[in-house]
Length: 366
Image 1 (spheres, rainbow, N blue to C red):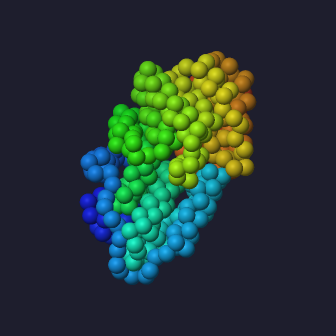
Image 2: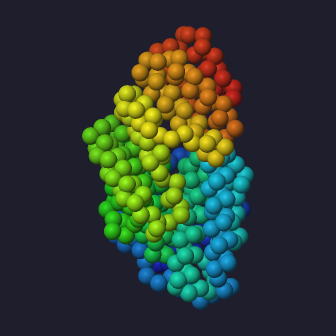
């Protein structure tokens, strides 16, 4: 359920709506595992034909622009609440209900080619958000299925740049689950096929995730090349952002700099990581709560790699202060990595106290 990637747009609607219904009824029992092989067929089919033809349809209710605006508003609300409170927050999780009760009937309705393309695109973004929130709370099986349906609907609507973004998100899930090589291939394929069709900021983000995957694979040269390409594309985007989609507006130079700090932390190059962090503008905790908490853990880990326990622990405590208010397994993974970097000082009292704090406040096993 939810793993199929049909070639025909009508079949894509049937598969997606059936999956959303099962999730909303809680009859889909998601496991906690991640299978990179589940992405194989969807990725190949998207790479072969990333955009479909006219999605116009004659069926049930008449779909209009008011319906599209409602779905976009739902996506915007879910995105903000996810950033502030994590994927486990009830409002971020309400996306699956929106997909089943609002989007599914519209996809089975009557619409023109122009309305249909927008409908498929906004529904694909909602499905991507549902996958992202599931990924954030550690429901990787469900996340994969939502991502696959998002890619399928983006293709059915002929939205190549949204397909590129969804495939990039799938690559990010792969690299975070330990499959860096597969993530490199997915991000590289998304970039190659969307080049010439996607806005520079979309392509820049794809190169950023490729750089992160190379770093996880411990390839500093390839990571630096991809990061430089992302920075160059971002410069082009900042010169003219008139035609880019709203869902990519989060990717700024500040985000690139923050992710670059993570890239060099993964490469165990604390000097470069801390230098990049200095370039990253401060993010307001009330808006990007989870991101701020994760960034503090990343930079704290870089300080530990530089053998600076005092600064590392200071940032570690600030990270826990923030992440204790966020429902995000993914964010907790960054604190686990921080705790691992504390290994040389495990016998020190301040370190034992910090690890005890993460165990009691974040439920992170020692």
